[in-house]
Image (cartoon, rainbow, N blue to C red; front, side):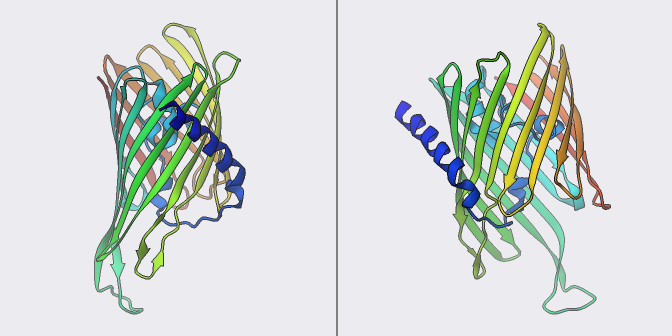
Length: 299
């Protein structure tokens, strides 16, 4: 098993070196929607923070930080009546952390026409699904690595396509107490043809840094920043802050490089083994607002 995770480290290093020359399209856009209320409330600057079950989306290496099993579910009422649901569970089997994840997105009210006309023939739906299996390992006290293999499926009316993708990630705890860096490369893979054309996946490279401090046993904060490059798109910088006191957490983040969004925020409540998180992300240009409500349970 150690050879497997050492191989992941080597692959990540190679992919980071070659990624800028890799071309990718803008298909399967639901893979770019941030998952989990906590991460979204922090401006989606979560690559080096990932330490809960939502790491299956942001950085699978973060699963190695789980001390208990955790299951999470997030409902996202996204813009333009798009519904996006995220479910994930993380747990340990021996020294290996395992994660299972699901993303389902539904887009309704798509007008269908055979030719240009004022009135559509009918309205159809589009569905996108991702099912993932993640593995992570604490290689040393300062290094975590992980990988996620994903099955992808899309359907628009009677047309379907499927594919497989891979995410690779690592988190390194620096010699400075509380300071960590992380990196992931997401959506390495391919789709089958949709009608007569294959959909290219949104190949994404994330590098992040996070710094956490605790002033007491029940109060502290984390600041984080991610550099996000979805190839063939603009570069984005995400920053976020999480401040917590006892069972309450307050979060705010800022995203740069987007036409329709920038500030996001949210909060979290912890009750024994139960966690409730909320995130709010407003959009410009009359697109609407996004509300995410997440529930987590430790076991």
